Length: 282
Figure 1 (cartoon, rainbow, N blue to C red):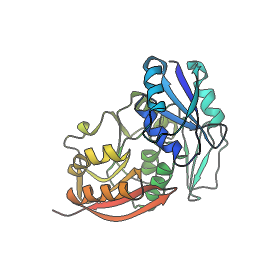
Figure 2 (tube, helix red, strand yellow):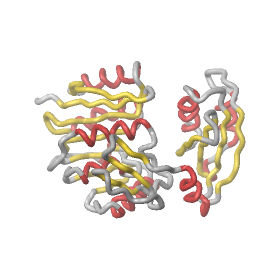
Figure 3 (cartoon, helix red, strand yellow):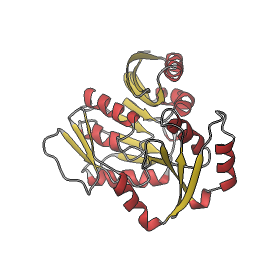
Figure 4 (cartoon, rainbow, N blue to C red):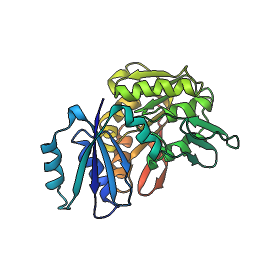
């Protein structure tokens, strides 16, 4: 499968990288990386899904009036992993959790080491939302807790939760590439008993969990929060991330209150937020 790489030159990194990541998501781009300079954004879309006119219009007619230049190139399927390897570095979270690719050296001075082959899946701990959620997973007592990772991506959060004693663990993602990558990463880390499901909130049905992790985005969280709460046990804990400080967090708090969740705390990094809520006892 070939991909089109869009290389954008932006007037500044903040806030335009986040803004144009959102804009290009509407054009089918499903992966993003920093480029070779602070103001360069790389976006990737399957060649079969690429529409030059749609991309041109989205960038030219963006609602912010920002001038953006870009170039395109084809990334051959056989070169994709090499591209990831050239851009992917290991991550250490809270001096306890070390996340690396198979080609990085092992460390034995950490509590948890997770080996992730990122491929095309979101969740390598480089993004603020993933690292914030990892901090919460490291802090939360999980032994013997039934846990759901919603929008699991690479599965890194589910893997860490299982390593910390959560059981059983379920990971759900609606992207087939992420689904397959999740299964591979589970096996790579010796946690093949994690149940992986290809689907979205409609796959929850009559499941029940003590802890839910949902690192997705504001709109999906607001849309599907009611379904998550239905499968969360009384006094259960739910973590949300994938949104910003300010209006986004306020909207998440308001919908959470409507769904019967009490706000507990939040963490913030570079304006990105992760928040912890608890379901009220009926």
